[in-house]
Structures are given as structure tokens and as C-alpha cells.
Image (cartoon, rainbow, N blue to C red; front, side, top):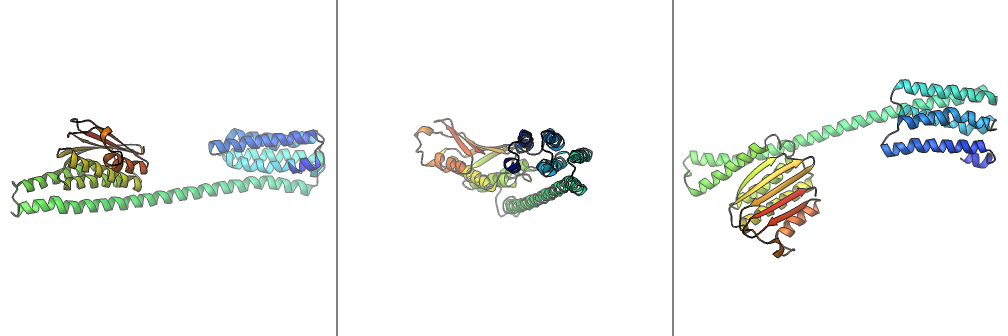
Length: 345
């Protein structure tokens, strides 16, 4: 552009050639920007128009000196570099570079340029393609290595999370089910006593949850731990919780923490206000989305009469919104309460 503006302002052929060069560049790089990589047809247009045709067209328009044609010839190097990365097949790259070398050698002949000038230019056209192809190969190789290392790191982290979850389950089994059975077997506890029967019921519910989560918690340890923590906290208040799982999806740490706190608070409200000792928790996951539903068949309430700054609207809804999720409360007097927690919203 600077050459044309400073030295060839009076040449319509130079301006036309510059317009063509800018047009095919915008086509090639604009489509790459939009699609994420260079397309075959825009690159082919750049090779044919800017690389092969433009030198002859500008020469025919009255620009005959080698020095005046230099800016047009330089477009051959950029065209060969683009072809080297846009054309995936080596045969296509070889054909494009060969066409550029042959046409540029032929375009220099009428200008009576020296052999050294022609050889240097053809060398630049050829090695522009070589260097671009090498850089393209190297960056792709490094990208694959980085992807592999990232996948290995994620797998290792998931393995550590699964191991930690198993250790937590083993400890919980030791402290609950095994302790209860040992106390009954040794005669220290009366199997028919109400407190012992209540503890057995909690332990049985815990085992059922483990069975339901089997095969899923390995893929979503944070989500499994969030639900388990909420249920265990509710059971410590004497609430019986029935759970159902239909797919567990791994959540980010902040989302899992918000879901655990919101589910815990929802179950706390059942234990304290619903007038029933039984709650139902359903967990469904699809894609990257998790929906947790807490239902009770208690006394219910009118959500419109609840202060918006307190209770479920604040302690549950605010937690989910702050993490990027959402919460809905559906209740009516005498009809129980249904709380739905979603992440993402």
C-alpha cells in the first residue's frame, strides 16, 4: 500500500492490483476469523489471484521495472505460506507452491531482472511455505501434547477425588453400619430398642444411597458428596430422607458447595417446619446440568406470606443465585412443599 501511494499513484493497474490483494486477504483471514481456521477455497483464491495472476496483470498495466513489481511479487510469499497451512494434503501444498514458483519465474522474465534477483525471490516463495508448514506442524504437535498432559492431570485429579470419596465412605461405614451391627452382635445394644431401630433405619438408608450412587459417584464425586452431606445432616436431626438418583453430573467446587448448603437448608426447613418426619430428595443430571428436588408432604405454607428476607427465599434462593444457579419454591397450605434447585440456572 505504501509503495502504491508513494510511487505508483498514477497507475490504475497498481491500484486495481492492490484492491484485489486486499480483497483476497480479507476473504482468507476474515473467513478464518469467523470459522476458526483457514478455509480451502479462500486460500486457493489467494494463491490464484494474488499469487499467480496479479504479477502479470500489473505488468500488463504498465509497471515493467523489477523494483516497481517487487510489492506484487512479495504477495507470492504470503500466498505460499497461507497455502502451506490451509491445505492439509501435502500434494495440494506442493502443487500450490510449484504453481507460484513457475508463474513468478515467468513473470520476472519480461522485466529482464537479474538471475540473482529471480533466484532470491523464488527461494523466498519456496521457504515461506516450508517455514509456515513447519511452524504449523510444531504448534499442532505442542497442542496435542498439552491436551494430553491436561487430560492426564484431570484424570489424576479425578482419581484422587474418587479415592478420597471411597475413604470417606469406608470411614462412614465403619462409624455407622459396622458400629451398629457390632453393638447389636455384642449384646451392648437391644435390637428392639426404639433408638437402635432408628439408627438401623438411618444406616439402611445410607447403604441404599451408596448402592444408588454406585458407578456415578466416580464421575461426579463433588456432586455426590454435596448430596450425601445434606442428607446426613438432615438425618442427624431425626429426619428420614428417601433419595432417588438419575445421573450425577460433576459440578464446579463453588456450585457443589452452594448446592450442598441449599439442600441442607431445604431439609432443615422440612425438619423444623413441615410437621413431618419424612422428606424425598431426587437428583437428576443431564449434560452439565443438575436438578435437585426436595419434597415433603407436610403442612405446607403460602409463599406469598413469607418475608422475602428470611427462610427459603433468602437462605436457599440467594445461595443458588450467587453460584449461578436458581431455586424455586412451590407450596400451599396443607399440600406440602416442593423445592427445586438447579445449576446452572
